[in-house]
Length: 282
Image 1: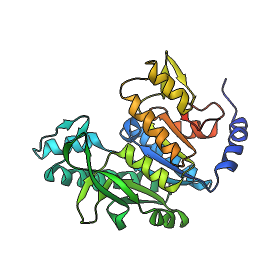
Image 2: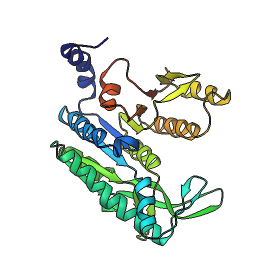
Image 3: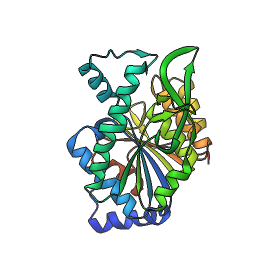
């Protein structure tokens, strides 16, 4: 059943009142970041959220464009356990694509809608202080993990009504630059800000179990579904990361389908929502 415009606004009102002054961190990626129509609606959606008084912080990826640019430059791309091996040449490509091209495209997209976006990389004012990531004693080059977020800088910008758009590139105390996984960077930033919500815009509907979308999930329910094999493969680390973020002080984590127009608004401002929300135990 299609709601009238009046019904849509009435349904949204309590959510607008609830979230005014709160902070949402949005991980922006997938089709929403590449398809022209979805890019336009994303720019409008985050501007609407900002204009009604919600603080918005965007963290974006760009793996596909990094690979394409590296290929044009004759630089080989290889992955180790799903992580991009990042040598000195590749880390320069990562900076160029993420902190340069993609970041500024997103900022321009939002500012065409008067969204007051400002582009940053983790290098700016030591926004994302990083250290080398080594997992299972495997060295994958200049890949890092965030150990500290300059929340003072983010809050300063939010307080001035701006919308930080962050490229996940970090820097250590010696000025060494690291490539950072955008999902993990978004989680750490959300935790550091004690955000109301962390929203992952992705190319999946949410968490599907037995061909049915799970609209809400607690950690104990998630562990049970992993244990019985209902949740498997690449969804397991996503679930684990989401609950780590919740346990670090974020109120809710959402996985929503960025391929749907205005999915951000539908998830946040309607009773039913459209994706999966990870919530604290009741």
